[in-house]
Image 1 (cartoon, rainbow, N blue to C red):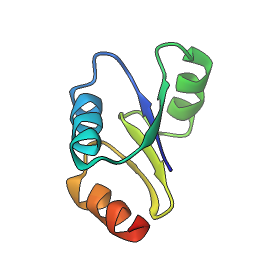
Image 2 (spheres, helix red, strand yellow):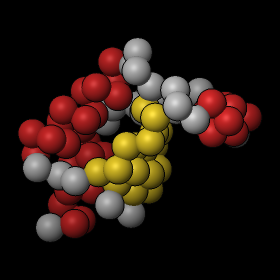
Image 3 (cartoon, one colour):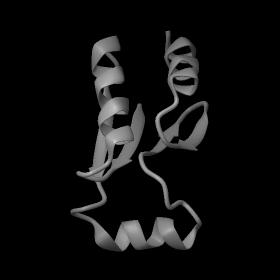
Length: 76
């Protein structure tokens, strides 16, 4: 299952969630606004862009329809 780390004010986070919902793909959302220590951890790792997406086909930052489609195909 996809795990998506999001922030409230992130347009790419909203686009990623909408894309997945439209495709009927389940995902776990973790709010970085509600987990500031986790957000700090990611920033210290150089991951300063959201969403942070963790999947079975790799991890990435930002809204990426290509990578989301790669994940969807791998899970089919």
